Amino acid sequence: MSKPVLSAHFESRKPSDVRLAQMKYDERKVRPQEVINVGIGNVSLPTNPAMQKRMFNLDAPDSPFNKGVVKYTGTAGTPEAQEAVKNILRSGGFNTDNLYVQITEGGSAGMELLILGVCGPAGSSEKPLMMIDPAYTNYISFAERLGRKTVTVKRHMGDDGKFNLPSLEEIEESIKKNNPGALLIIPYDNPTGQLYDYEMLIGLAELCVKYNIWFVSDEAYRELYYIEKDKLISIWGVTDAEVPGIEGRRISIETTSKVWNACGLRIGAVVTDNPEFHNRSVAEYTANLCANAIGQYVFGALAHESKESLLAWCKQQRDYYKDVIVNVYNGFKALEPNLVVSSPDAAIYSVIDVRKVVKPGFDSIDFVLYCASEGSAIIDGVETTLLVAPMKGFYDEKDPAKNPGTTQFRISFVETPEKMAKVPELFIKLLRQYEESR
Image 1 (cartoon, rainbow, N blue to C red):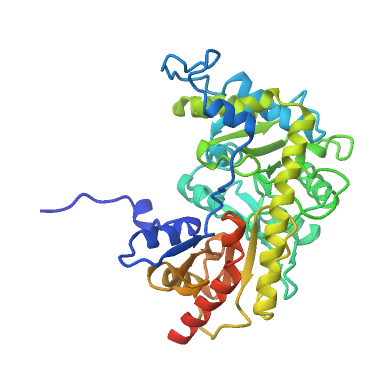
Image 2 (tube, rainbow, N blue to C red):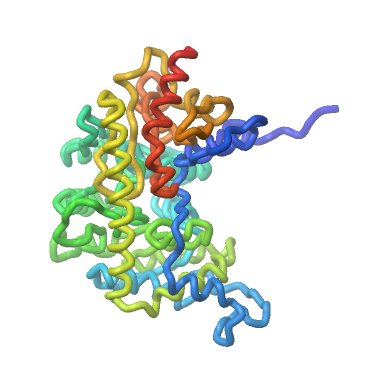
């Protein structure tokens, strides 16, 4: 009897690099005593106290859920959740008077709406999404899902761990060659931990105006930076005063996942200063009906927090991550100086490149699968393994021989400080084991 046939798209799909290690580990029959998972940015810290209060008191007299009824919200989200996004932006010093907010099912749904809203027709090469490589793998995956094209301008990781942004001239040449619909940046970068500066944002904005394309910023990590800056870096800090014509073409992707420690809440937003983009995006999203109603209510608590409270929370987050990231960075460099480790300037990630310590033929995915399926090492007397993300899927590069991610991994600083302190020794022990087995 013949079997039903999967679509060509499903036949071609493989797990996202950020989920690959966990999925393989779930299949493991004999498991070590401990597993440290830094393969995905699944933040393990408690969420903001104002959000916790609502989360733990859904039956309170003033809760819309106190009678057990959970109805749809408006497609664009509740006014309170929309106001929470604006309140966060205002606390950073940005004017929200002419901004439109659409609440989505996590930042991921916002990414899909963005691609649909700025790129050419499905299956064509028209108006691709332009990114700076390496880029967050989900944008590449969603573009493939939707049949839209992506193009990248590449940056490279030096032996000092610094990712060098491409020059404005390189980016302009790529714009002229590819005619993109939008330029996407992640100023507090995932996966590299790189931090953009305002001079770069202004230069990029000028190119977007010059070539009449959308200027898009993923701002999931906006408040997480670890080097001194005069002001918060954001697309919303680049206005017509600095770049005439930029207003009306700006879009940001927002999320509760990282700064607000609420990955599983699955609440994000698409923010824009273009009313037509907003209206069309909401129209597209009506098929989804709305984002999580309870999640919107929990997040909506931030609409009522003071600027001082929000800023204090963000500083607390920065202080916590800075200590953890610096300790792990120093641990890697002390134990294996030939590892190339990205500079910990922003976000909650570092890239580890093993190109100087492994034999030819090394493949990052094979090493990740080894750690998840059979590898382990004794750390503090405990048999332990490590789950990390291979970087191959973060590069929009079809030729495996040219993919820098073949020797690179992304580390997420999401486990406890005590567990994170074990990561350098554990990674190096597992790497040496794996190399001996090849």
